[in-house]
Amino acid sequence: MKHLDTALVRALLKKQRIESAYRFRRGKFDVMGFLLSLLLIAAIVALFVVFFGKFVGIYTSVKGVFGVEGSELTAMLHPELRTYELLTLLYAVVFIFMTVSAITQINRQIFDADGARLYSAMPIDATSLYVAKTIAIYLSQLAVSVVVVLTVNLTVALNVYELVDLGWQFWLVTAATCLLLPLLTIAVGSILALPFHWFKQLLKDQFAVNFLLVTALTGVAFWIYSIVLNAVQQMLLGDDLKYFFDEVKMTAIVKTVSCLYPVKWMVDLLAANIHPAELGIGHNALIAGLGIAAVLVVCVVLSLVMLRFTLQSALQSHNVGSGSLAKKGGNLLSGKQGFWALVKKDFLLIFRTPAYMFSYLSVAVVMPLMVYFCMTVGSSLIESLIGLKADLELALFLTLLFGALTNIFCATNVSRDGEMFYIVKAFPLSYKTVFFSKILLCMLVTAVSQLASAIVLSVTGLVSWYVGAFLFFVGTVFGFVNICVATRYDFNHARFSTEEDGEITESNGVVSTIIVFGMLTAFIVGGILLVLRVVTELKQLSLGWLTYLLGGFIAVVSAGFAYFYFVGKLDEKYYRFEGGEI
Image 1 (cartoon, rainbow, N blue to C red):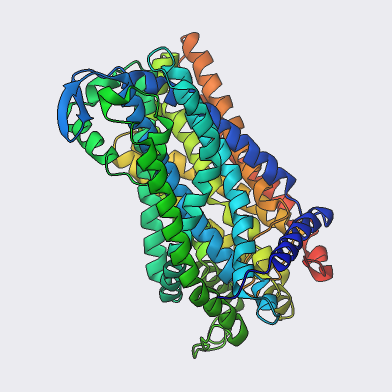
Image 2 (cartoon, helix red, strand yellow):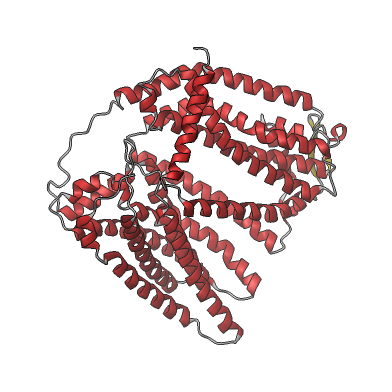
């Protein structure tokens, strides 16, 4: 391994900083997306502080369960032990997510970055390049670590301060943890980055397998999300979660916590002041520190050993190409009408791009589960909070909300074509054929997803069959609204990627704008209908049919406006279109 060239590392870091600043100067900064991200982060932090803070109070008061003292299980009640368990479990979840993020960032920076083609032709040694990329990744992980660690530790501390004396060491170690956690996740991620890249290459052309795998993982994620929602519902409804944590579950939690290395060592340092003699925790601070140091050293050594193989493989792949040959096949238009050929082209473009497949198709497939999980929790929650059943209005709101989120793929209907858009434009095809083929594909995905959602709600008995039919109609019509608005908005602000694969990584705010538009539509329409239902029920008026009438009317009128927005001077703009460059 060559000696580290610190001057070269500084130059590479300066290059990355200038490139980031240059994106802002070129007007490519997604202001809407940035504000939406800040709003989402603030909402998540606020919800976590409120609901998890309440959960901390419940969990630390669990009685008659098992704790660890040495190697034996003994019955005891200690809020200190419950606090230790919560911190360990939380940090384990954070550690997993940040490690996965580190793996994907390392792969993106080394294997998938556009600059790798430039580096492969320059006299840049692998060690300096790797260190520069790692520092950039560390800074991004550090920002996440600060937000997460401070949120978790402050929430726990504020809810146990009357029961547990955390001591000043807790806050000192909290500051150190913000810096240490990204080091651990990047160290572990560096070892797993190359196997992950090999696994991606193995499945690169297995599009169906990729789709099934990603969809299954997405479904599992929303299943876990439903469990969290159910717990939140129990807390809001006043159900005592203490009785959920019986002897069997608590024993399993304690045994799990005792095995969660290296996270357990981090919490040992945090809990150094929590009655170490009584609980058998915290007194291993020295061992914990040595253990964390050992993990870092081992990971750094292993990552440096794998460095040569990682970067050589990445740089060579950019020098010689991917090595894959085009499969023998017919002309896109051979044996097909131009309209259906374009539908197939758009479908294959989405299906064969992993990022699009996850964001578009997989989310559309799991939409029925998303609606079902939220409906099961929200139905009883709304009835308890406002004193009336509003299943129709809630189901309609969820259908519109998740339908809008599954329709974000139409926000790149034009931009994701890249240079292919000009090729299609040169074909002897009308602008209607080009654009309505995109509309049809999006409508097919939307209709299937909405139909599955309506069937799931009807079969499970959450709504009646005629309500399910109404939800399918309104959801599909509003899907048409989102598709028309998004496609035309993307066409008006088209930006084609300069990456070799043409994948859209920056949308100039189009995707963010469409997400906000869809969410506002869901909240406005759903909110109006829910308020109307509450008012009529309070006045003891039987006007449930107003939801059907008003909901259907708003949907049809919105579809009309969206269609005319979409086709307005579309032919003139299409034939004069020369934009799209980034």
